[in-house]
Image 1 (cartoon, one colour):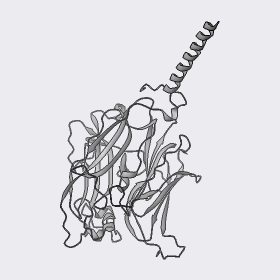
Image 2: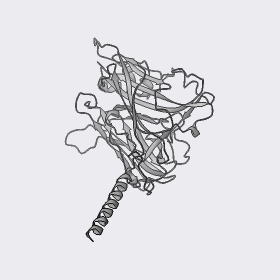
Image 3: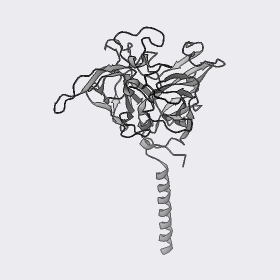
Image 4: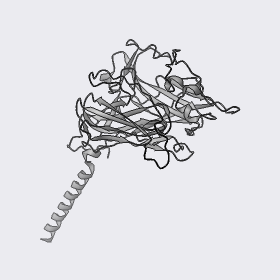
Length: 421
C-alpha cells in the first residue's frame, strides 16, 4: 500500500512540474515577448561647424536595418569625432528627422538635389499616417534638443512595420533619408536668439530660395538654413570641428504576432477649419509674444496656450504619445472630443552643464504609455490639441507637435508559446 501511495505522489509531483513549466513558458498576452531584439548604432555623414554656423543637410540612403522588420526604438544625439556627446550649449540640435522612401533601382540620388528630383519615376515618399499636407511632417522618427531623455520605445507586442515586400513598388528599393539641423552657439552674442533663429542675428532678409521674407517674419526656419551664421561676440575664437549624428535603432524580425502601429503627427499650427478634413495646412512653427511682465507678487500668469481642433483620420488604440516643444515650452496635451485626456507630455529642463542636462534647455519630454485598451480614438473624432509656452519673454520659431502611435487592434487574449525560451 505504501508503494502505491508513493507512486501516486511521484505522479502528482511530475504533473505539477509539467504545469509549472508550461505556465512559465506561456507569457501573458500584454507582456508577450515577440522575439530577440536587435540593436545597431550608426553615424551620419560628417558635418562641420564653427562658432555661429548652421548645418541643415539632407542625407540620402543612410544606414538602416534591412528586411521585413518591426522598429522598436530610435534615438540619436550629436557627438564629436571621438564619440563624445556634445552639449546643447555648444551645438544646439534644432531637430533631426528620418523619412522612409522608395528609390528606383539603379538610380542614384545626389545629396541636396534629391528633393528636386522628387517625382514618381525615381523617388516615392512613404509618409506616416499624419494629417499634414504632403510636404510637411511626413517623417517616421524625429526629435530635437530633447532627444537624450525622451523615451521612444514601442512596447510589445507592437512595432513600426517597415520593409514589407508587399508595400515596395516594383522596380524600387526601400531607403531612408536623414535631415540634421544643428546650430553652433559657441561664443554667440545671444544664444537663445540663435537657437530660435531670430532673423536680425543671422542678418537674413531672404529665405533659402532667395525670396524676400515677409515684414512680420521675426524668426524661424527661414532665417537659419544651411550655411547661414548667427552673430558671435567680437574677438571670440573657436575652432571648426567635425561632428556626427549618432543614432541607435532597435528592431525585431517581423512575425504574425506583432501588431503594427500607425504614426500620427499633429501640429498646433494646423490651419484645418473643421469643414474639409483634407485641408491640413501645417505651418510647423509659430511665435510667442511677451504677454506679461512677470512682476513678483502678481497673479498674472505668464503662459500662452494655443488650442487646435484636429480630426483623427481613423481611430484606434493609443500605444504611445509624446510632444515636441522648444525652449520656453510648458507642456502639451491631446484631448478627446468629450474632453478626456488622451496624452499629456511635459518638458524636462536641464540643471547642469553636462550633455543631457544642460541648464535652460529642454532635455527630454515625458512620454505616454497607456494601459492596453484604456485610451481609444474614434474614427473621425475631432481631437483638441493644446500647447503651452512661457510668455514672460518673446520666442520665435517655436513648435508644438504631438507624435502618436495608434494600433487598429488589441493583443489577442489567446496565449502564445514563447519559442525564445
